Amino acid sequence: MEVKKHDIKNICIFILPGLALFTLFFIIPVGYVSITSFFEWNGITSPIFKGLYNYKDIFSDKVFWRSVKNNVLWAVVAGGVQVPLAMLMALILSKKPRGWQFFRTVYFLPQVISGIALAMLWAAMYNSEFGLINGLLRAVGLGEYATNWLGTVKTAFPCMLIYWVFYIGYYMVIMLADITNIDESYYEAAQIDGADGIRQHIHITIPLIKGSFQTCVTLAMIFGLRTFEQVYLLTNGGPANRTSVLVLYLYNQMKTNNYGGANASSVMLILTGACVILMIRGIFAKLNKE
Amino acid sequence: MSAKTAQSIVREKKNIRDYLASFFKWVLIIFFAVYTLFPLLWLFLTSLKTNAEYFDNPFSLPAVPQWQNYVNAFQQANLGRMISNSVIVAVTATVINVMIASMLSYCLSRFKFKGREIIFTFFSVGVLVPLNALMVPYFSIFSKMGLVDSLGALIILYAAIGLPISTFIIRGFMSSFPAEIEEAAYIDGSGFYGRFFKMILPLTKTGLVTAATFEFITCWNEFVYANLLTSSPVTKTIQIGIRYFTNQFTTDYVSMYAAIIISIAPSIIGYMLFQKQVISGLTSGAVKG
Image 1 (spheres, rainbow over the protein chains, first blue to last red):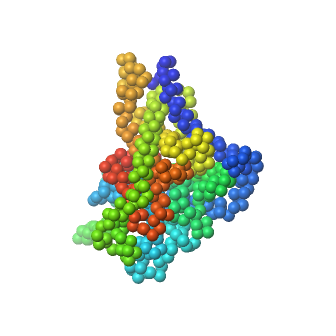
Image 2: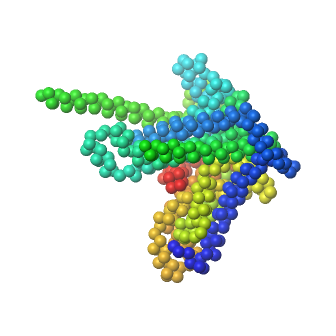
Image 3: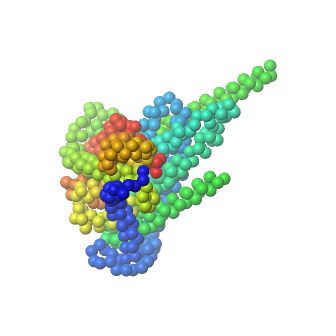
């Protein structure tokens, strides 16, 4: 609709609240962390300009690099394992096997449960004395492998990664919706040519859902970078900072009143996110060309 | 004859392959279902046992269902207060969020004006900002407003950070609504507000419900900022509440498990009742954005 003159005032009134909230909670905070990351600041006395001091400080911290490494690993597992598994199940359910709607409902279930409740559920599963996993191992005679899963340096981080990898419902539903939109006539033509189910998927379905696959990989990796509550609740970064992630690192900096360091970590987190998005775009642009 | 046997060999080969494919398909389908349901079911059954039963054997069924565990969890941790806090925050934030987002979406989808594309671009980037990176500024903002440790802080913050996604969802629905009908209403003398309230909003109800579902679930499940911005017992939400069970019931496991079940029961019941809206609400932001 063309803007009528007397509507201009009304449009301004309608846009203003949204724009104000967005400015206050997105634009100003991002500017704020970027600027204050160059200052030394404990939250009480006035900030002192220190140039790149905060960055040098966190870059020389082993825990920071451990957190970056864990975050990257987390994002890669989410984008590289969880999303492909979700695609596999979307392909299977798209052929509407018996009870597929029930299974879709079940797979999506973890999505409505809070991260903190899921983390507590898995804390109970991993519990070294009474947990279900050690219980199962003992029941089948593999009791010697029972261990304190989250308290052991070797197993803590893999355990943190593994439990959500099989919660595929969210990405599966996105890709399944995309598959449902594919025109039936493609498959009819393929059937006449004698292509079986698996070939149809490889030559028709997968190329046609590349877009939603890319969306899912991007989302999964971004969620991976945002990770906090699982780590905070299950291990709080331990043992020996093995499971620390960037958000936990910045949270701890903030708790010790090192606001400058916290903000430098925030900037690094935002930059890592931007890099990941650009990287995924680059990779998919290249794939689409070929 | 030879043609016939060749054909039957091909058919047989195909049959074996089909059986194998079908077998693996069902292994996968059932694996993912068991993986999701079994731990939840185990937690629920354990929450009905006595601690002694649980320590004795994590697999056994409760001899007598201990509903008392649920009463304990409710009383010891003041769960009622936390649930009502969560409801207040989630409902208020959702109403504010959807109202502001639909006003903005109306302008973005129905009118052409300078700056429209810029707003849209900013919101697209906003969806992808890792919000957990903004703990320090959000804390400062609410300190300056004097709202730290109040439900108001959570309401404002949740309404604000859900804005980009809600706007995407609602804008998508409003854009698909044909302009001619609105033009006709305009010619008939219907004003800006009349068209918005009497026409656009009722006709894009599905979009509003979808956005509201997304926002409500996000608010209900939010932990990071509830943990940062609230500290006293009267402002705790349910997610903070169950986290403190880990300290309170270090020996009373079964009551802790009962508390976890209490916290997730509303989500699961809501999901069962409004499955369609929940699924489309949680995923349409991704598809439309």
